[in-house]
Length: 412
View 1 (cartoon, rainbow, N blue to C red):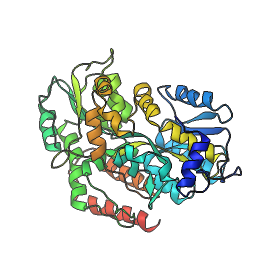
View 2 (view 1 turned 90 degrees about the horizontal axis):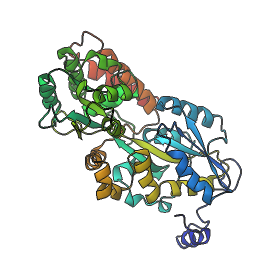
View 3 (view 1 turned 45 degrees about the vertical axis):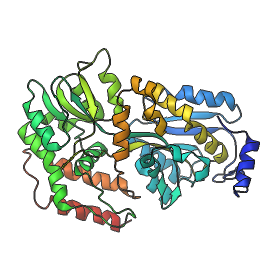
View 4 (view 1 turned 90 degrees about the vertical axis):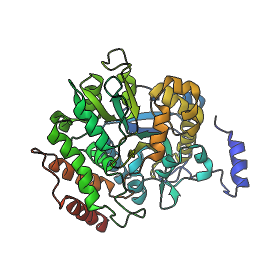
């Protein structure tokens, strides 16, 4: 529930904020109250509009209109960037991939937010960290995400914790393929590689590339070995999230890396693995691995005319009860910690304990304004190395990749 305006005013004045948390007046980039638009990726589960209707019924003079952008993250970003570079007033609230925070903040496209207005201490700490840049809060976590290892319980007695164990088990299964991830040359491949790598590749301040060339080569070797030996089927080179989901759901893989959204369909009546699979944390080189952290944060456009309304909408949309609906009606991972410990929710979504563990252990992608360029470089280099005949990684792979990333950092 939103607090009444008078109470909000009193709280903020008492805190020394002086202006009821207002972020402006009514000109572009100065705030104000009124109708707003919410630009985010396409709602493939049709859960968003009912949540927006709740706000609109309570705020007839400040209604929010949903603007659905393409489903693919790269296309979403391209449309948002074009809009913001033109200083357009069309977007008010932006649903940002967690990795875009630094870029959008660095370019002045979004405004900093007052931390005290949001219950950040109730959120998963790793998730909150994705909304920070150079010590300021630039967005509010809305959904989180972490990769999981899906595995067939009828084929595997004990899930693997390392890539070596997964290789051994995948080679033993008969009648189905071994392992599938996201190996097409796009952001998904960069994510899969960073997860296999299991370490940060850029310093916290974004000024130094910290990639270990030897470890970079070892991580790549996991995939080239799998393709060469056949426990990663060649068709997986064309997999994105949906293709790998269907391959596992149709019973043609023993293991698959995917996000939590694949759990529901795999448990559905048309699934060939219903009742015959479970999820665990991703494997690592020397023990349990760490997922790359995904999710969506909500930010306010610097060119919005109604930034006050946008701020209050974000407070509503990231509140506890709405976050519960994000999970129960949209099947997206929420950001409130207590929802992962709710017995009723765990009964309905059995993967929640593993997902919580995975999110807390997850690693951020590089915090850098030019991360998009880094992703392209990583995906391109790894894709080239995965081209048949799947030979062992050359000794200069890690050195070359580190040099390419350093050039991006240098040219910031």
